[in-house]
Length: 156
Image 1 (cartoon, rainbow, N blue to C red):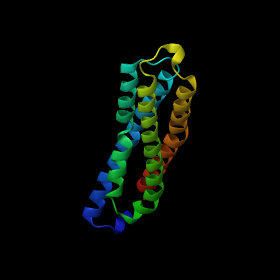
Image 2: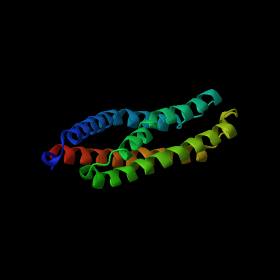
Image 3: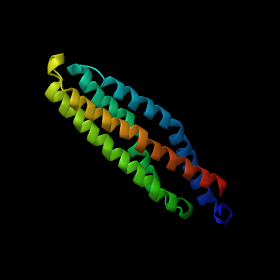
Image 4: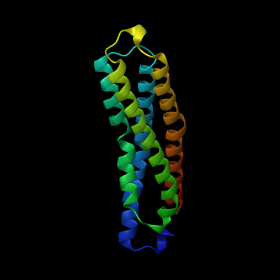
């Protein structure tokens, strides 16, 4: 299929392939950061550290919407069918990450400056459950869909 493309299309596809490859290589760092945030919510959280977790989450997940923007700009027919699935996975991940960010922010406002026994274990647990879903299900789906797209593009 790549043989039927003009030189500009081939060059654009090669650039996209490199961007996709770089994205895939960066994904393990996102998962590592998500696991660290999850672990952080195992214990009592102080106000300054709580606020830094909100920022840490936003920074760790920034890669996903950034790549989603890149992906939407590419209109090659070979990419299009895979793009739909990957875009959905990226959007699901981003939406839950934002929801978790809001929960962390709300938690920090409500519990960030209280003593240990007044901090809700249930609310920390809720944040952990959402983080678990983010990095076990949605992250894995993003990773899988990215690899499928990459393999298909390399094969063609």
